[in-house]
Every structure is written in structure tokens, then in C-alpha cells.
Image (cartoon, rainbow over all chains, first blue to last red):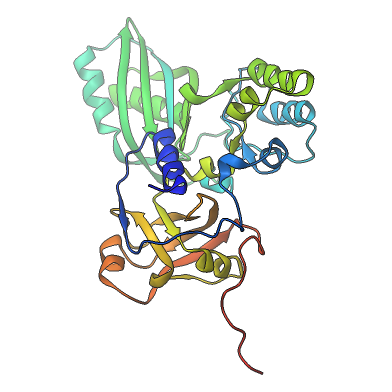
Amino acid sequence: MSEGVKFLIELDRFAGIERRYVVKKEGSTDPSFGKPPTARTIEELLKYGVINLDKPPGPTSHEVVAWVKNLLGIPKAGHGGTLEQP
Amino acid sequence: MIGVISHSSKEYVALAQLHSPVPRERLEEVVKEFTGRIYQKPPVRSSVKRVLRIKEVYKIEILEYEGTFALMRVDCQHGTYVRKLIHDIGEVLGVGAHMRELRRIRTGPFREDTSIRMHELSEAVYLYREEGREDMLRRAILPQEYIVSHLPKVVVFDGAAAAITYGADLAVPGISLLSEGIRRGELVAVFTLKGELVALAEALMSTEEILASSKGMAFKTKRVILERGVYPKTWKKKEA
């Protein structure tokens, strides 16, 4: 099994889903272009990465995003979920 | 790309308070009526238009029931208001109910048990900056591919990946392997053989149809993620 496929199976495991794969056509990828996501540098992860952060009650999502940006020293960050305000 | 997450299913643990006790069997019965496709009118204080909407509740499980307090786990479609769901359950029970507490335990593929706390992130950043240790920060900041980890997957050859970054749709010959059970119309994530996310796409053919074909458009590109130029163009320009 290729490294790439192993990584996809790790993604499925993370999501708690078991998927089966079928090969349409065997093939290889040129190692001189691109690179596996697991080989990204911290700088690259900071640019295009995701954090599954446990937001405590109290601060708003917006405030937590501002805190994360400041902590990581990054210009852009967003969030993927807001709970209704009680 | 964050839209993939906001449009994915959600799971909550909610504490409901009934305004009078009812037998557990009765509660279980009514809760069952609220699973599947339900009609829901968004609450007065909501961020969407207040018209009756159909939402799907995949599962409601009563975790604990004591006195008038019911702790329940709700697995539902995005945009379902759990506060309203509990209120409506109270109406059908005839005693009334309201939500006391709510915690989201899953958003798409991101579950509570794989989440990190703010102090852990802070510690990871400290260890990286002060001691040059990357391990903890690497566990905290995941590659963007995790955002689509719950979607069915399609793996393409380098040339097809390059073409997709120029807006092309994905034809059968570009596919190396794919998840079983993809249905027409389904949203999938397209990857390179190295595991890099190339694009989000909509299936025009099912897995079976793709396996049985040697040509034809299999996936319509919806959103390109991979940057142009990472993989070289392999197709020839038409002569002018």
C-alpha cells in the first residue's frame, strides 16, 4: 500500500468511518513534485492547517479565533462552527 | 473549504428539563417521533429566516433520565436547533420542556475525543518556540486534508491533479483508486497519490459505473484546493 493511501485510511480512521477502496488502475506519483501532507513543515501547517479546538464556555468563537491568531502569530484564521448563544 | 464543516452533521449532548415528570417509556416514545425528517421552525432568536424547515435527526439517545432532567445525545443535520427540538418534544409530551445545557461533541469529522484544549495548544506553541520541539504542535495543527476526512475519496494520477487545478473536471482515465459505494450526486474529496487534497467534486458516476467504464466524465470539480504548478501540465496546447 502506498504512503498516500495509508494517509487516506488514517483520515477515515480519524473521522470514525471505515471505507473500502477499489483500484481502477495501478499507478505511481512522481516524487519530484508535491509532497505527502505528513511531510509539511510547521510553517506550511500554520498556513493551511486545522485545529480541533475544544472551545470552553464563556469566550465567543470570535474571541477564541482572535486568541489563536495571536498565539500562533498568523494573519488569518477562521472557525467552522458556532453554537447559538444561550 | 470551511463550508464542508459547517454543512456537515453535528452531534450534541443536551440537558433537557421537563416541566413535569413523565414515564421514561413515554419520553422514549416521543423522542422516537422526533427522529428522521422533522419540521422545525427556527427560534425567535436565530440567525436564519423563520420559516418551517425540514431537518433530519439521525439519532436521539436518552443517556440519563432522573426526575424531570433528561440528558440526551442528538445526532442531526446541520442547522437543526436542539433548543427548539427539546421545546417541541415538551409540547408533544404535553408537559413542556426547555433546554438547560448544550455541548457540541462532534462537527463533521471533528469529535470531542480528538479535540485539544486551549492550554494544550498554548503549551505546544511554547515547546516549539522555546525548545524547538515539534511533536506536540504537529498533533495540534492537522493538515487541511482532515477537514474532508469524512467524505468519500478519489485518488488521481499526477496529470489529472494538474488538470483539475486548471479547472478541469475528472474523467475516468485520471482515476487510480476510489472509495466503494460512491453514488451519483455525492460530494467527494479528490487526492493525489501522495495524499494531498486536490479538490472537492461531485460524482457524475457511481463507483460501479466508474469501474465498468474506460472513459467519460466521472466527477465535476466544485472547489479546487491544490495550488497550480505543484504538478506539471502534461497535456499539449492546441496549435494556433
